[in-house]
Image: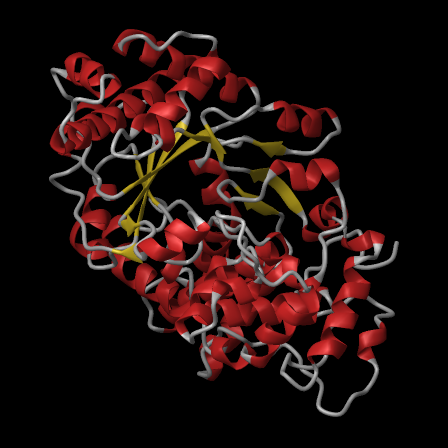
Length: 495
């Protein structure tokens, strides 16, 4: 097979054999085999040994944003610009911060106005500014992808933009770089997508009939948060998809239950909720408030209270049907209104805000904190809550797991800060392992590799300080790389 080898490599720094990009071109761009490891000799040696044990484990990806259509269609990924630049909000935000208009990067406008459509021109813009990503997680992931997966031997720049474009375009056209071939090459054991409550699940059913372990995740934000401007329109979609006329609160809950059951039947093991705050509290007058929402008469305070009520309702439903509840808190979405109005959601303008958990989750945890079927995985963009609130909560409530460092903190230093802040209070086995949370499909192995390297180095540091016994470290490295994710998301022995 051309392109990447069909069997997943355990050495993440090795390119496919016979790669023409191996030809000598002076000082070739390459991956440091000790990246993410401490320079202290004894710690580095142990980190290498631990990483060697976990580097080849299958990838479990229970939360991300890869569309199922990508794998169902199995079409070539596209040109270098549409594969690496246009859909990646991490890259867009950095380029935007340096004054590059999103139109110049090929991002479609909602009003249909003209944007750059020449992928080579977009790639040139990106290459001319590739240096901006030095020291960032995006830069680390991109280097891994471009060197390890695509065999690029020179760092992108304005001078080589056309040459690197041609190299990548040729690779992307090969059968071995199609989505399903990469799925096998990456060693993905299970991939969960993130799907609106109103989405059809036909693509997942077809993929599963074809033997691919791709499952949906129930994301109901658009139909449980009436502060959204599109809430009523999404209720109409909920009616159509569920077959339940949403003419009152009881019918509304029945429609949601119907969709949850459909997702579970399609293989879902989890739900996902993105909320500004962790407020989750029952609303005694929920039925009356819902009627006012339908009539367009609810106040903003009532809408917020109803959204908090619905997080509580979702938790109760998870306790009933066993779907793991994920709660991502602390992102003020679409902070820059002009960008949202021109380009829509998810274009890099989301910003972290301070938040809290202990008081906000008290009603939910008093009711469900020890429920045998309920599981809640918490993700935050407020690092100040790691040791003050999240670790103590997870260190007591059996239903809680702490999600991996999320979004801006999915980075080497972010992971280290997280492990330092939560491990002493929550322990390792109350963590949820790793999720890649990516829209950029080729980045999946790079993101897992960073987590595995960082956790192995962190464990090695604890061993050399005498805080963890050396004979415990291999099991802990495996748990952080693989076991905890499967257990947290109830994926079972075979996914």
